[in-house]
Amino acid sequence: MADSTDRRLYDLIERLGTLLHDRARAPDDDPADDLQPVHVRILAYLDACNRYSDTPAAVTAYLGLTKGTVSQSLSLLHRRGLIDKTPDPDDRRVVHLALRPAGRDALAAHVPPATFRDACAQLPAGDRAALAAQLDGLLRAMQQTTGRSGFGLCHTCRLFRREPDGFRCGLTLEPLSPADSEKICREHETPTTSGAGAAHDDV
Amino acid sequence: MADSTDRRLYDLIERLGTLLHDRARAPDDDPADDLQPVHVRILAYLDACNRYSDTPAAVTAYLGLTKGTVSQSLSLLHRRGLIDKTPDPDDRRVVHLALRPAGRDALAAHVPPATFRDACAQLPAGDRAALAAQLDGLLRAMQQTTGRSGFGLCHTCRLFRREPDGFRCGLTLEPLSPADSEKICREHETPTTSGAGAAHDDV
DNA sequence: GCATTTAGTTTCGAGTCGAAACAATAAGCA
DNA sequence: TGCTTATTGTTTCGACTCGAAACTAAATGC
Image (cartoon, rainbow over the protein chains, first blue to last red):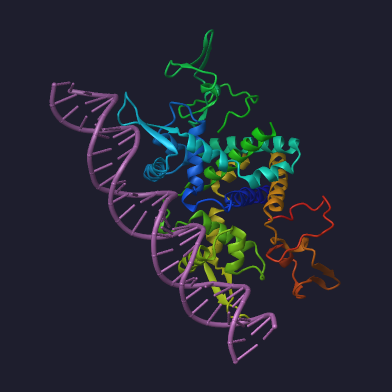
């Protein structure tokens, strides 16, 4: 019984994913500008991650791909002028990635897809919020079972410090702006005293 | 405000999809047996569709791909002995597809993934049911906005007939078994008097 | 009977993806 | 200091996805 609900749940998520990725391209779009779903997800990640997490290795871990695959997708995005690649001055093996304005535009054009926005508009706001909260719980459960932790919002981190003059990262000891504290960090550590009140700390 | 909820909702579904497709392969698996996500979705569709909907064209429409792509994936599945391909005796252009025992085994091994099942086990049954109901509403809304109708469960069809000696399809006029009536049909027509009570009629 | 439509296959090019080899750099340790 | 090991990212290879378009075969329309 629980089994059939689980199966239904899985089918729903898969089906929604299929419908979400359906090419709903405007007729005036140049096919050469077309981005694969994975490209869009990379752009979305780069838009949401902090300065410790904007590297190919972090993208690789977040999206669960191999570094070879990610390297190729990143060079495609770079070739098309959607992202910048900057060598790290301190560790010359490391590359920092950043969205260029064109990349930001491409992201806005694709996320969320127009069909999804329209579908949401048909649902009561309360339903949407409830659905988001429920999915949040499922995602958290998935992260626990897969052991794929290590990513989370900066300000929910065990090492996040609130100081008189602002915020600070307890790992790097660097100061953090309010914007920084809203971003995804690859070094995130979940607080041990996990109260049920902390919502939306999973990503 | 509704916009940020929508974005969050979209990100959650995408993220869940990523985690769902993460290769959680047992170490004793032969890489040659490995199936792409799209292969698993084809198997799941063939397991769930009725005898009017077991053709390459129906798979193509349901998954939103091109017929060339589907043709190749189907020949791969056929090559590996997971499906049968039988020419239609009445229309010799048409091919009927069916799961072989090995295909059924492969489907059971992949759907739902073990990680997903484990995650579900952590959630209260009530939450899961509520989540499924909410996602159902979202899926229905997506189908309306994308106009991608034409697929639905047989027994929820406008043409479905309950007769003294059983069920019957009002389109083909053929008799239907109870099992038939539970399957996905490509010719499905939504009843015009759409009461809010009919749940789970979308696929 | 001939044109049109439909079902499915084949072919092509761009790209994903995992695996493995590789180069460059950093870190650990004697 | 020098040597070994670990880490970051790129490159190469082969199998595969995917869309587009050409193509075959068969059914339908007039």
